Length: 388
Image (cartoon, rainbow, N blue to C red; front, side, top):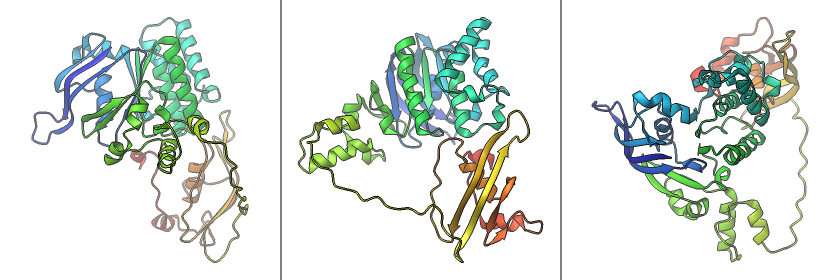
């Protein structure tokens, strides 16, 4: 069990510029329990996670893990029991290759080679990492790096695993796969999970939800109990699952529903059978013609990573699109769909093997094109801010 008694934490404690992040927390976490930790940015979630994993240490109060008081002298013992997946995967990826990074933790636990290989293969299977098993980590996308970081922690099989917003950088199918793995590992190995997230729908089947606000414990309870207090959640900038919002609005309209509704299945079961309105499909053109208003145009753009090497992989295959001046455009796709690659080609950061990219009708890869002037006109915010 993990227990916190009047735990507080301040950055730069004892100095005039100290920042209090946590105050008077009294909490317990049981082995095998699935707990969601919710709160807006700055509420103290990540700070609490680092205290639980002995990255930071409480500046007041008492934190114990399986009876061991968490201090700098007991940090190694705590970290054997509590694994932490950081919000930014690059903060914890160490080895050059995927398989080596996954095996790094079990190796440092002194496990025999066959056990290390078994654990590594188990998490590779669970997180669908077969295709990048031997890949260099430097070539991976942000979502792939996140999955490798998760795999490295899970391979150590700690008593508790803290996931600090692990689904932010991965595609929805992979997020669902990860959460299914969390439930399976809890059942098979009795691992307790503490899942920090902003996606409320991910935690409707957890055992307990803890809500943080400005370093304090705001509320805790089952998903049914917490999401039934949607007005209090809204007051601190939090939301409830979309289906819960829909159920609440239908209930207000006179539908007989047991609120809160937590899943689409619950809503479907409780709604009366009725004929659905006919929705006419909207025809969408496959491409937008280039006009005088066109600002950016890409035509048949191809790009290959590590071309002509055994690790080559396709980034773009005939990408064609136009963006008009003043448009607001959403670029959607799963991990490795080519979203970032296309943006980098538009900015001149990567040069396609074939195809053209034009800004205001001018080919940006022409010998006399001024790339510097292009970057004065188009700004980019990268996926990981520290890279810029």
